[in-house]
Image 1 (tube, rainbow, N blue to C red):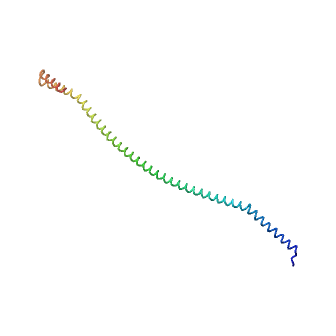
Image 2: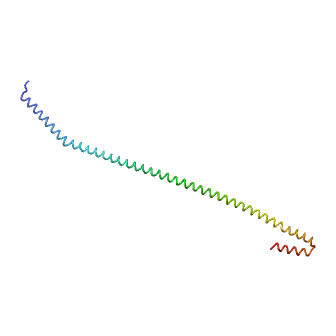
Image 3: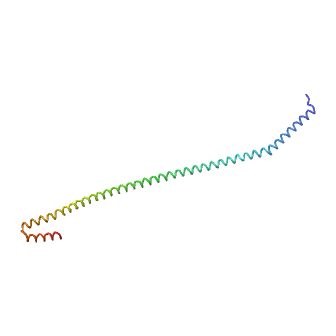
Length: 162
């Protein structure tokens, strides 16, 4: 089978067209697709960088929050200890105050007993002394028979009153 001249030209023409088609396609790809792909790659890289930055920011924020939580826990423990100390001091003061109050109350009760006893003695004295003086007056009058006993009794009463 011999290749005919026109057939050869036909194949050569087709190959030339195909080559031109490949060149045009290459130029189109280089002109439009490659810049688009480069832009997409840059966008993907930019998005990846943004995500890395956000991740770094989140990690720093998380560490900062964890540190703040730890500091707040320490402060909470400090404040709890301080409150417990204040509470203990307050309870001690309250107990001391109660003891002092009880001591004062016991002293007041004892003083009231003494005052009540003194009032009872004074009331008895108010009753007994005049009665004793009457009795003594009567006895002296009987012993001294009248005037001299009366004078001595009055002198005695005056001395007692002073």
